[in-house]
Length: 278
Image (cartoon, rainbow, N blue to C red; front, side, top):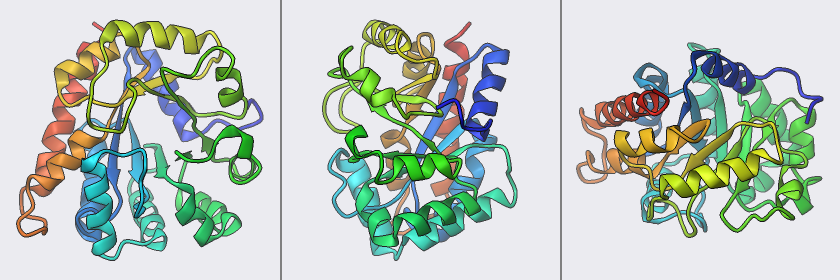
């Protein structure tokens, strides 16, 4: 919606466009594997090359997620992660970084339980820039989307290969920030899309909106990121980063290599994204 002021997301996208490159959008789960390690990862992401951060709000029934993010949600909840702690982590991140956009991603139930009015107010105060709520369709915009927009928080929609030219205008009606194109059918972290299919889909979405289109699902390596970045405004990576956390754990606990494993992968992905536009 044009009524929104310039946000951190808008400013970052404009900066990257001026540099002639795509964005690297990284997803990690808040509180995975514990609150302190999760915050350390969050704070380290921009320095490793993340341009926009999606911070997952843990939920016990993340229906659109594959096994990696499901397991991350379970680890976070078992470690005591709550919505209050998630917003506290955003606030702590903002104390040292006032430029990198943060998008909270997840499901409506934890927000509903927290209270929509309270959530929107607290999220804005903490420094949240956008929301991706997987299970709230545009027919329910009055529930959360419009209150978020009125508070100055972007509401980012998911588009999929099944979002046809009739459905896209409905999805995009109150969208802002960017469009997240889910490039394959199915749950997260299972399949990868072909670059040619991505190019066609991005062109079709852009015929309906001036918003940047970030493409995700299945990207695990710098080479895959480069292939997607050649056709999209940004590349979203989630399950691979969550797996990087998982693979360093001992008896479910963080180790000295946990943060570094994530930042090393982010650095490789960032290099790939930068190659994608050359």
